[in-house]
Amino acid sequence: MNPKLSKSLSLLAACGGVLLSAAAQAQTNVAALQAKIDQLADTVEPEVIANRRYLHQHPELSNREFETEKYLVKKLKAMGYEVQSGIAHTGVVAVLRGGKPGPVVALRSDMDALPVAEEVDLPFKSTVRSTYDGKDVGVMHACGHDAHMGILLGVAHIFAQMKDELPGTVKLIFQPAEEGTPKGEEGGAKLMVKEGVLTSAPQPEAIFGLHIMTKFETGQLAYRAGGTMASADDFTVVVHGKQTHGAMPWNGIDPVVIGSQIVLGLQTITSRQMDLTKAPVVVTVGKFDSGVRNNIIPDSATLKGTLRALDEGMRQQLHDDVQRTASNIAAASGATVDVDIGQESAYPVTYNDPKLTARMLPTLRRVGGAGLVESPVIMGAEDFSFYQQQIPGLFVFVGVRKPGASLDEYAPNHSPRFKVDESGLKLGVRTLANLTVDYMAGTPVVIAQ
Image (cartoon, rainbow, N blue to C red):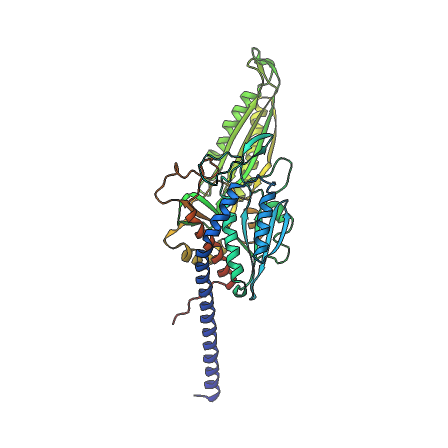
């Protein structure tokens, strides 16, 4: 063999051995981090539950999470995080810079409770009352945001104990007003993004989030690539008719009849105008208000409802079709309409980036084990979608319904009877922590021996 060729082959073999050794060492390091996360998840589980219970007993409504903000700031500073508060009113951002170089990963939890009076008899039951839309209401974490905060505080504690080994920087986002803002106010993820939570240093390149759900049993971890939760746009249609005596309808223009025709006409958008083989859509009219007396045809009628879609193109088509359908039905009877869409809520589709989902699927399989399932589409909405419009994001679901129990026993989110099997929270901690570390380290490549 040519001596020069032999030398070159020897160098290539040596380089290949070094690369193989480096890759194997990297994989070993990641495996050690994964094992440590699982060990620490056991350690912090009582703390996760304690934090969740305290926050459950002290719920606050959207954009009013003042005491919740103080609680989070105190906890995070004690762990050694760099903490900013007052973001998007009451939001908290905490940063931990790992001891090794690597990417910045964001994790998000929501903070707000709902105007719901709790009906579950717990030692830490909420008895808080507040004012919502001018009414005295009970306040309850009926959507599990108390559990989300408890989970993320648990993840924060784990990373604080792994700081020197962490191959990157973690940015924790505790976000107010996910459930929507009071009238006339900005808030939620949209305002967090507007105030630079994703563009200020350290700037994350990916974001992960989760939601507990009684739809899934404890031990189940659910994911879906692409459109996962629906967009949500409120709409209002005001029909302008002509008031007259109820005994002489020919002297006026009846907005009640026209409004009724619009309600029925809007349903043909989903049944006859949208390609439902692509993705589901929903048009719901939830309120119809008109008139003051039985024998007076009023001047106007007001319809209020919600639009849901799993595809942003279909979402825009819904907007256009509602405007056209309502306007043309009204015009056919000599009335006019005002149509407003997205005045109170306008959440985009919660869209799990397919490439990021595929990259993190090995992590989900390892953490979820036999409990990993593919989620069906969910027509509820989540403002996590505003982060996903800016950077790749992955949003997953963690089951908290005791295995074998019915939804009568573990009511769905937003119910006054909503409750949580707390033994499911540790899976949420393990999921967010492992997704973060695996992303920072890159998807490990298994080297064939």
